[in-house]
Image 1 (spheres, rainbow, N blue to C red):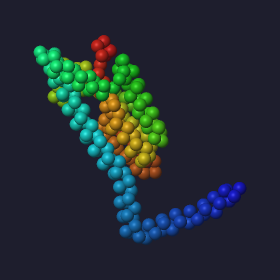
Image 2: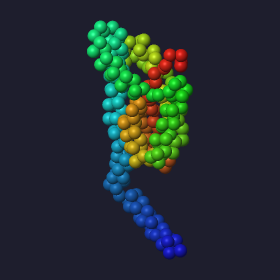
Image 3: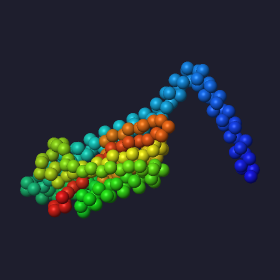
Image 4: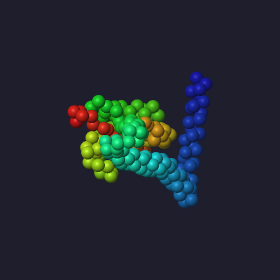
Length: 209
């Protein structure tokens, strides 16, 4: 009962403070600008952080896939066993970055499960995950190599939770299979939400198309 009475006492005080703040906000033009600037910083901060993570990961993905194609050609053509062994080891390390799955359907299901699990782990409710799959575009590798690679993309919608979002972006940056944030949109307002386009790379096994 003491706790209930304390809450009843505090509630009018909080309402009174909110009314005072709103009155001051209407009367003070400078305060309006300060609140606006603070709100912009709150929503722009994660976007700036994302841009640095996304750009770095995209460059790494493109560079690694191009190098993978060159090394595969080297493995098949070189007559130097030592050099071929080193190339094969590097190829093996790169292929571990592809999203796992015996079939494309299992890979897509695993990607969606990873997204939902990591968002919910950080306190973000997942409202929608929409998946699509398609061939990898030309990034400088030969067409024979690219024909076995596909993108899995996910459009994700969730209510905005700033701390959870930052932690989820860290998960994407440190994931062993590539997870790239291609786009992040923060919708401010009463029902603030985040919209993300995520992408990973799948290698199609023979007969698993």
